Length: 177
Image 1 (cartoon, rainbow, N blue to C red):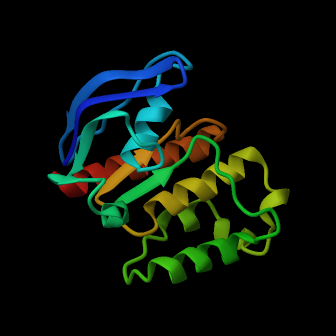
Image 2: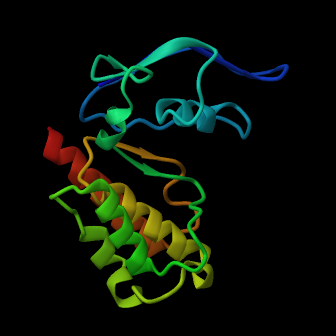
């Protein structure tokens, strides 16, 4: 599903990724573990097309990501820290993304389980870090993507919300197997 072949990336003199190769198959749950500054987020951003590797290539479903950006429609991404327009309300954010993506199938499970529907009129700038994480998680699953990339998904979540998210991840994995 995702193949990384000999990917390297430098930022000035700092080599962040050095000849990385990996393969991720459908139905796998993979964790990238390493110390801060080891290149985990750079690798994720490379897969998402937000950082262009200096060498190597990344394929999603055997298609080079540099050849067609449409592969991104297959990915649900939850950043480590979600940044959203401060004045936008939760409900407006979801409506805007639904309008942009024009995707018929929507997965509102996390939206409801995290009770974001009850906070739809709250502005993003007023939300706690944990509630922003809930918004990010619900957005990642919103369009039923075949690939989920979750960057430190439980960071900042309260224990109940973390359990809800873990259960959702396991449910998605079971759908594939």
